[in-house]
Length: 142
Ligand code: SF4
Ligand code: SF4
Image (cartoon, rainbow, N blue to C red; front, top):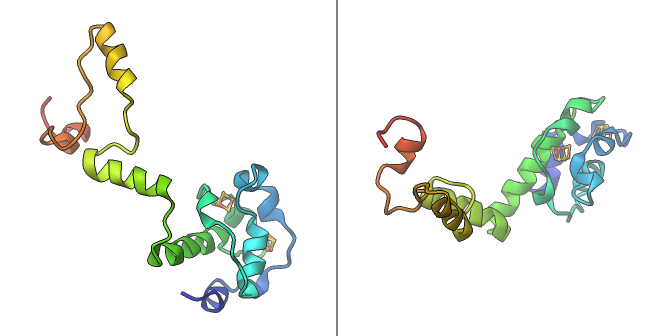
């Protein structure tokens, strides 16, 4: 979806640039996305920031005095990037792990060593463990 279409869809002309969204944004506090700039940039058809630094906490949407769905806009920007194949490696890795193992995080080899030293069993991981997703969801037997 083009920026002009997004601006219409999210009615960005309502934005008064009060920056309340940005003041409440945990990502902006740490050098990430600046939501009021994203809104303005999209409205003017020139946004080229990084929507992947958003934490999807939705605080911006909750505090906006004009009722703008800022987080929804950021999500739409991500979808736009993803459609063009622009998905950061860190997200691909999490998704790849989940598809392959059912875990979002890789388990470091040191965890196995530590568990072993404590006399604990190895953590199951990977497709070689049949039914892992069922076990994790409590539907299977361990
Ligand atoms: S809080 Fe709403 S009105 Fe204020 S700058 Fe952010 S999007 Fe615009
Ligand atoms: S949803 Fe994203 S842009 Fe909005 S406040 Fe949270 S981190 Fe910031």
